[in-house]
Length: 421
Ligand SMILES: Nc1ncnc2c1ncn2[C@@H]1O[C@H](COP(=O)(O)OP(=O)(O)OP(=O)(O)O)[C@@H](O)[C@H]1O
Ligand SMILES: [Mg+2]
Image (cartoon, rainbow, N blue to C red; front, side, top):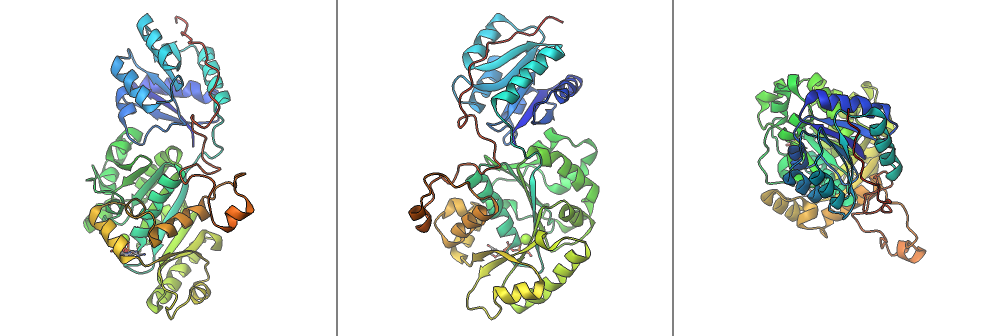
């Protein structure tokens, strides 16, 4: 999802820009970030190459411009408007050299600002999607591999489709989801965020998030069962409200807990996966979980099965599981103990550690099914029969916004200086 990110350390000014931007037909999700532009540019995971920025500050020093250039390395095309009370000739020169779209004077002239934003809309058609697609991974029995599957899937979507993904660990007892994809120490946990719910905004949320990989952020679990009590449905709703416009995909590790807060997440999920294995205990427990889902009114197409540690010799087959649970097996993942163990020991996602392993290939296939790539001209019959992919794995899916590098470079707009108020 391409966004219009409005940045100012001054809360009132930020809100004034938001009010003006909302009057313009920009077809982008506006997002308010009330911090200093230099800080916003340093926030990992906040700004994507397909976003458009409006930065407001009393002055812009070389440090801010340098960070801006690093964010948008495409020469001559920085999708950004700088807004400042007294733009100097030096700032105008440097901004123009970098390819910044325009420099406007604060206070903004609404008509001029709207014209600039209209140019932005014309330049890069934003994706139609405005809210993140949400996946919940639940399990009917401990040890099914729910955390491993949820976290590895989140990482696979982020790296193979270039989507911005937020993984949220709802299971406070173990707090282990973050460590499936990173060895970084989380700056805060979900319980910490909920404790500060009263003053939660995007900047605070960002400070609490573990930026695991360029497109993958994680809200870690507490690893303390006592803290589970701090997490209320209202808190999660607040986090969802902030995260859904800011990310393309949300992945929740719900685990086995069915309580008011996890039900809130399940209610908001587009797809609810139940992770199971092919054995009788999973069959029995899975049936109960599906009954709960039915009693909560979730339609059958939303609740799907993921068979983990698939074994074709298991006494319970996928067909038996489907019949007993009344749900479709959407994905199967093989047992790959060595890769899973190594990845867990190193805090490296399986797809990064062993991209050609059986389990990594299964995650790639899962991503291909959930976010199919458009067929390209190069996908001839022979290539398809041989299973060759014409497009690189990292190219975006149909719902991904084109990155500036993929769109035709726009004709360079003249640098505009805002009118004196
Ligand atoms: N496909 C797989 N092949 C091999 N090992 C796996 C596979 N999936 C998961 N595991 C391993 O099984 C163990 C349990 O996995 P995980 O912690 O993800 O399960 P869980 O369902 O989240 O458990 P819990 O109920 O404790 O939350 C981990 O050591 C994980 O590395
Ligand atoms: Mg778990």
